[in-house]
Image 1 (tube, helix red, strand yellow):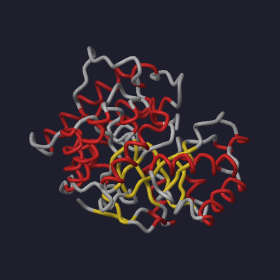
Image 2 (image 1 turned 90 degrees about the vertical axis):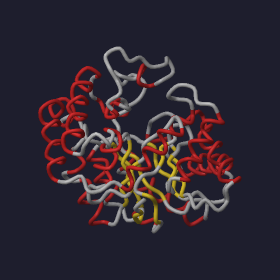
Image 3 (image 1 turned 180 degrees about the vertical axis):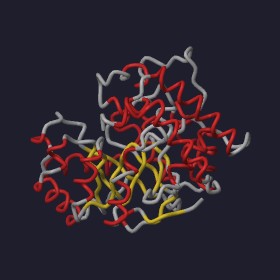
Length: 331
């Protein structure tokens, strides 16, 4: 597994990390035993970066990671969590007092005195532009409860605003073969500033795995059932904001591209993950995994050979044909 420096944190992390939203049971039920098995398999496969949030399962994801790290103190894992979604999504919620309360809770859940990295969890755009917010985050670092901070964003403009802040170590953004807009400005700006890029939703909520059909259904408590219209949170977090039918068509083309260019031994999911971390400026990609097999397969993508210009041009062609109108302008 290749490793890269995670922006201004200075930490070396695996180019394929692990997103743990699903361990909070927000993608359907996942037992604690299965969650622990996913963490084990990921670490054994060379993953050294776990991404979580204080609202994933109302802290369940953090607690499982904290328990795992307590039992494996030499695992060498960097943990990034997020804060900000436990309060009304308005600028008045983003205060130093709330930051202290939220990070104290995360430190208890993760069983650590100092958080490796805490990220604002897709806050309102005005928060990303607020000087006082960054003053409060700097205070957390000075107090020693947080080693570094970053911002998880929804839009390119938010990403660029965060990158311009001298204390921001990382920016997390949706980036995948169905969401190419960050390639144009965000990645070059982050690279120039020394800010790490954490790429989330790498498989477009599973579409890019090539395993879904029009008959595929999801559990009621799975966001792929209840958030297709963005009624619960930003629609970009669900299938990258692509309507399911269009996504299936584009995913079929993507699978054909993988088989034609890379051969039958590379899965569409592995190709999708490898394509992301091979973009200049990306620090790590955080696919989720609900079982050991997925965790190991995702990690294998971290040692994939360079996919090459033919594959890259195929990705762009699929995007331009099926997705640009629906996705590009919105973000």
